[in-house]
Figure 1 (cartoon, rainbow, N blue to C red):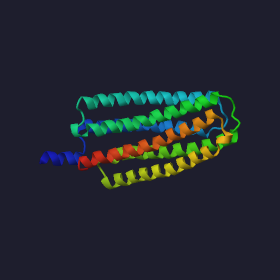
Figure 2: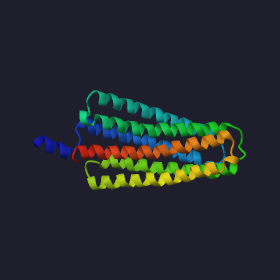
Figure 3: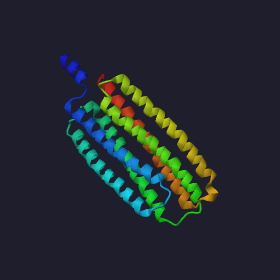
Figure 4: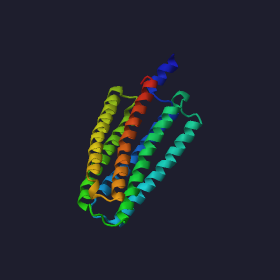
Length: 230
């Protein structure tokens, strides 16, 4: 009985605590990538050189994230995480790492379009990119909250639950922004060439995926803490 009480009070065994700390590090890389992505989307000068620099930076962050994810997966495989929680921890790592993957994918799409010919729909493009930047910024806010949640979970359940609800509300806000953006794309199809139309659709969906992944990660953090009785 005393062992159970001790576990609840300390929340994690050492392997689990270290995993949460490493996942926070992974989320921090994701936040850095989203900051760069917002900058890319907010720029209207189509400066290929600068876009390339920022894409390379996001690519490097994605590679760093892959190393952390691989190390975490190896630790989970070696049994550093309780067997009953290993699946949830694995999914949590995958969700946060996938944020970096999506940011990387969107940045590469932006670079690809910047390399292409000047589009007739330049005015539409400038306006639409601002909305995409707004969507990614919502994702960045979610990721910042997720980092705080990872630090708070287990020590203050009320605060942790409030953070999780705030992340959910941001995801719902992002859904509204995404839906309006998709309506705008389809309503403007006559102004857009096929490449631009496809690019807008794909990057908008991938940006929205970032918000969904943050909410999924938040749900997993709460599930783990509840499983431990924290």
